[in-house]
Image (tube, rainbow over all chains, first blue to last red; front, side, top):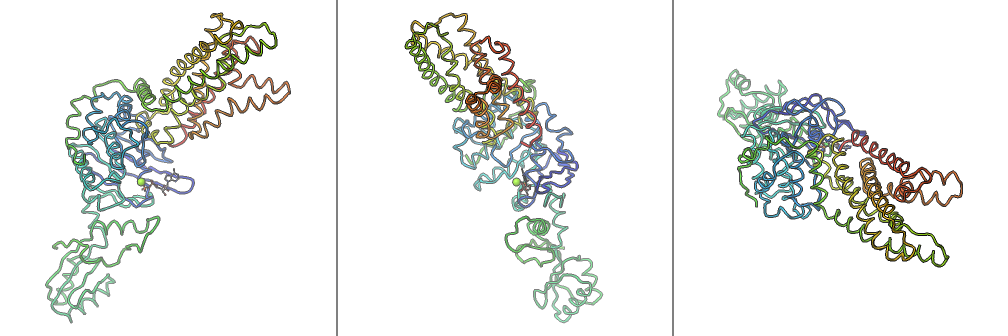
Length: 322
Length: 272
Ligand SMILES: Nc1ncnc2c1ncn2[C@@H]1O[C@H](COP(=O)(O)OP(=O)(O)O)[C@@H](O)[C@H]1O
Ligand SMILES: [Mg+2]
């Protein structure tokens, strides 16, 4: 288990991590999500005792990293930046790590096999491709057979096969009861891997929820209403307008209402004596919920940001029966 | 390679990672030892320093012997003295090895891996010193021995082959090199960059004494004796003046200690 208590990191120029309070539980994959520059890597470095928090503390199983007797046996991490000497072989790199924590040599061979690098183990790490480098990083994270694992953007540079492999690896680690904390700036990646989501933006906690809750909370989750009575639809729209709800008129017979519920709209339609052929929740995609959440905290906006209240586009949404 | 086995850690408990009590300081030292010998730079530095010594010591010895001959001088040259003079140049090749042990970790990013293994800054620094210092001592001693062996025949009748003088000088050379290795690790931990460390070490060991030697004032001459490379020469040669061998050792130790403290303070304060 990882515990963050008021963890803050202030650099000369800006606050990278702003008072994070978090508990990351074991037995599941917790996705750590946020746009580039949100403070994910900084948070992970603080957990690993590499960077010192300006305020607050980061604990692993109740202890600071530096207080762990054999840290590699309790926590394994693949951090963002390369952390190895390019002139050293993969095997020697892992062996040096193993020796520091009294881990038997045999374990080095095991993890090399696990990540599929046993054939290139004697080659210089500097000659490795990005994907092989990531695998070596994962091997070093697994080396001490730790209960807690951190992965910072682990699929960067991996081919689709490798991405799938990492996903399965993280799932199986969580199934073994371990704490798996994995960062990404892409929701699409987390959607497939994570059980639980922690979203940050500009160093601040934006969400700490299950995937379902994140979706349900999005204002982009809307209600689809369809009626054969186009006159009645005009009246309904007028009525909903009075309640200042966001309405998207898709056709004479169809609207999409955000900020309300099927129950409320159903009741209004009933009062107006309006026949309905369809009344259901249209869920925002996780991607949309994430974009909405982080829109205000993206450091470098690329194109037009998705802002709250903008009607979602059809097709990108998952339609769910109400 | 892509679809590696999924039994990630199933077999790991079998290897009993948690039953081994080692690690800690012993482990940290073993790890540094493994790291030192698994990069080529270590071997290049060692080979380079032996080669440099084998060139410089005989050259210096010959030139001293020749000047004695032309001056009709009758003084004898202690056989381990030309290598001591050569150390002024050769030391940089050996010290580079110590410097790289820390600066290469910063330039490659492997310091993050090292600190994940050994998060206590003091223990990390200590384990590097614990590995580098003995290696440097052995290297320094062997280099001085090689220098002595290759130079002696070229000194001809001027050779003072008194082993009671030569052996302490050779061992003192090992000690000086070991201490300068520790000095370089301290400076490296404080500066982090290889260029910054090299510049600083070079300035202190060669630049500064070179500049001060140009001055004719007695005061600067006195200062000179308190610089580590000059004190090192007194230490190796076993000069009675100005403070004796033990005094020279103390001067070098103080420089070394100061560098280590500086390195520790920076390690403790700054993020990795
Ligand atoms: N060493 C540093 N000095 C100054 N600013 C930094 C440093 N490291 C990170 N930052 C800043 O902190 C913020 C968070 O960075 P980071 O943790 O790398 O974000 P993420 O991993 O979520 O992309 C960014 O604005 C980044 O520029
Ligand atoms: Mg990052």
